[in-house]
Every structure is written in C-alpha cells, then in structure tokens.
Length: 185
Ligand SMILES: NC(=O)c1ccc[n+]([C@@H]2O[C@H](COP(=O)([O-])OP(=O)(O)OC[C@H]3O[C@@H](n4cnc5c(N)ncnc54)[C@H](OP(=O)(O)O)[C@@H]3O)[C@@H](O)[C@H]2O)c1
Image (cartoon, rainbow, N blue to C red; front, side, top):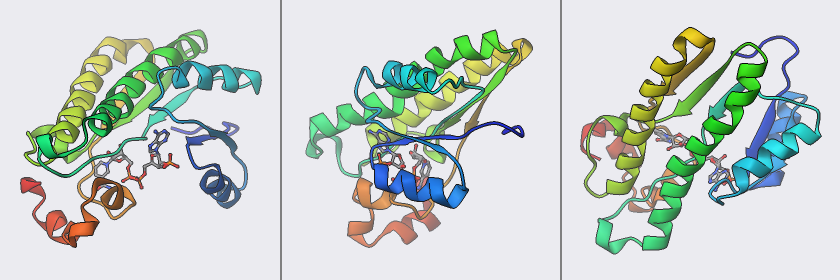
C-alpha cells in the first residue's frame, strides 16, 4: 500500500505518543487532532495541504468501544463512539477522494472488527458501528474498484491494545476470556 517515497502522516489526540511512534519509524508527520469533533476531518486535510502533501492512502483506524448494557452506559460517550467510528471515518473517506481522483488512484483501509458480523449485546453500539464500517466499505469497494481506488476493510478479532482499557473490558479482568470466547462479546 505504501510506495517508496510516500510520506506517513500520523494522527491521534496524544501528540507525545505520536512523536514517539514517529521517532520509531524514523520519519513521519505528526498531527494531533480529536477526530470525533465534526470539523476535524476538514481541518486535517487543510493541515495536510499546508504541508504540501496529498493523500494516496487513508487508514481509518481510530475507534473505540464501550462495554456495558446500553441503558447503563453514558449516552454522550456512546454518541461520541458513533461520531468517531462512523461519522469521522465516513467524512475522511469522502474528503480524500478528491486527492485520489486527481492523482490517478489510491487506497482506503477501514478498520472494522469481527464485531461487524453479528449484533453484540453489552457492546450494542460498538458492534453496530463496526457493522456500518463493513457495509459502507463493501459498497464503496464496488463503486470504486474500476476507478483505481481500492477500498478494503480490516476485521481483527480481540487484540491486546489499549482498546480493553478504554472499553472497560480489562477492568473486569476478562479480556483474555473474551478473546477466547470472541463469538459472545
Ligand atoms: N483491540 C481489539 O481487540 C480490536 C478488535 C477489533 C477491532 N479493533 C479496532 O481497531 C482500531 C484500533 O483500536 P486499537 O485496538 O488499536 O485500540 P487503541 O489501542 O485504543 O488505539 C486507538 C487509537 O485511536 C486513537 N484515537 C482514539 N480516539 C481518537 C479520537 N477521538 N481522535 C483521534 N484519534 C483517536 C488513539 O489515540 P489517542 O487516544 O491518542 O487519540 C489510538 O491511537 C479501532 O477502530 C478498534 O475498534 C480493535
């Protein structure tokens, strides 16, 4: 996906962590942004242009989950999940298409999940957001496959990252059990 000479732009909220990763990679651009904010995708593209860059490949990875019964989880956090996992991902895919069309092609990789394939009681909104990501990706893939823009979804199973802490899974001491019992979470 990455061609020789391509530059990497890392985006997330914690700039210190991005700088650390950029140092590990040797060279990368760092842009700190909260992608759950409605204007963030447009502002990000503006910042990329101001650095004289354009987008050939977009990896839509930022996302989070929350574990708990729908009525017991804070509504604002669940709506923030929709803003990040769905709204921002969709918005970013839209705004990079101009660059890809103008430059003869590109690729979008949307990070979904094995959660995309069934409803998820006790993670209802998260599973639904990932079902959206997969459905949206498969549709875009059809729309763009003959136009030089490759749109794909990545569907990982439970993986030890900071995801469990954010989702409140590790706190239950159950992430490994969930990983083994992936069909039921
Ligand atoms: N780990 C799993 O078991 C698993 C399984 C299937 C799918 N996934 C998916 O994989 C993707 C990556 O998750 P992960 O497991 O790597 O979790 P993670 O360790 O929590 O990483 C999430 C990444 O997204 C960034 N992020 C979170 N909120 C953001 C925001 N509002 N704006 C900008 N960046 C934001 C985080 O950086 P900052 O906090 O610094 O912003 C971090 O870089 C997610 O879409 C997740 O749903 C994970």
